[in-house]
Length: 388
Image (cartoon, rainbow, N blue to C red; front, top):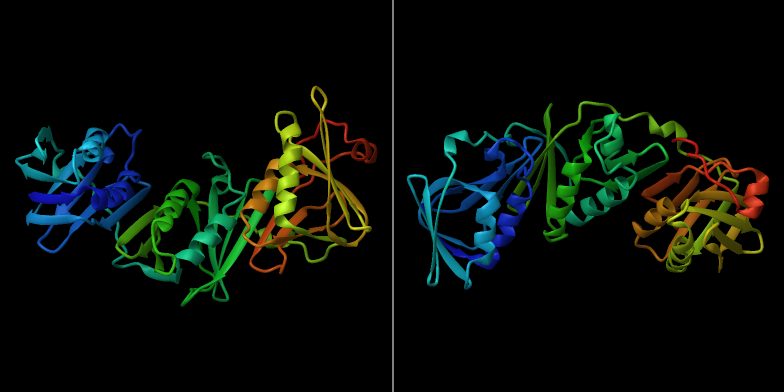
């Protein structure tokens, strides 16, 4: 195999494949990328067993077709640090010669026969189609509440993908909050659903960020995998063998207090309160009154107190409620609209964060249980809060 490579273009494709390799596996073959060169194109394949990717590489002129498995650990650094804008690769009998200007490197490859056979979508069924931009948005919002680590039950560190009435709904929870986002899709398969792990979803987000938002994404599935196809990339995620709880029953149907605020002003005020509470209890007390007063208070006994008041359009009952400032902040920052709508069902009900038009996205945040006296004084240690 002989290749002439434009470094800048090639490294964009190589980076996609490299991130899908395993850096912790005892199997060295999983820390490698399979390069397959035909006369027409070059494809890169990589896997960590739970996820895999097949993509068409850019910036390569094939002088002689062939295939080789490149170990990522050292080869990636050589590719990135090779001098000049182009370099040449020659592979023969498991040995590679890399030439870039006056520089020359020799290294070994892994046997091609040891590289695992990757799943493909050839026999998979269609789940739905939507644009890159729409999928990126619904994933960002719908996975907001998932746990970052690998936790048990498995659904805590996963997100549920479900089609209902030609809408792709993505929902996640860590038991203290729940996030749900939806996007209209083409040719969706109603009632089909699957849990996907957050590790794989994070990589999908990175891939989507590198693509044109107008490109169409085709999502397919079989009994074991979900496949995401867009442009020249096919990314595969192994399904989680678990079920998401029936969250629909806790979605609020009524509310006693509603607040509409400028999202930018609210984030700025909340960030200032969080400076005080982030190293103590991350608790912020919301004091909501009918006179369009939206007050946030925070306290750290060894440091001081914070109070912020901003204008809001308020309807319904007066209310005092305590919530986690980090959860509140994350729900606000995932939105892109200038205004946000908050709704409540008393101090013991969930706070609900929505877009101002109330469509597509909802985040439920469990309150921190405080007595009336504690809410008035803002001087308390929070408990774990009600679960979702």
